Length: 112
Image (cartoon, rainbow, N blue to C red):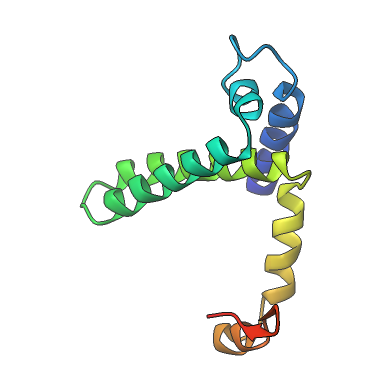
């Protein structure tokens, strides 16, 4: 079910991309461009980190939901779907995190 809600939310986000930016938050983000979406994603990341440092579990869950939502908006802007991320997580499943990280190569350099 949880994977389904991500897919359903992604479909709603995709459907709202072309809506009126005056009436749709998603449309307003898409209208303002990727840099604005990425800034918002960064803000939500910081808010999630701050919430996780405090004892209120509900705040952590709330901020994480905001973070995931904005990550889905960025995926949509890039023409990607949560299934792309799920497939990558499935590929990594069962691998040691250290081994998986060591196998990544970006522009001839190992990713840290």
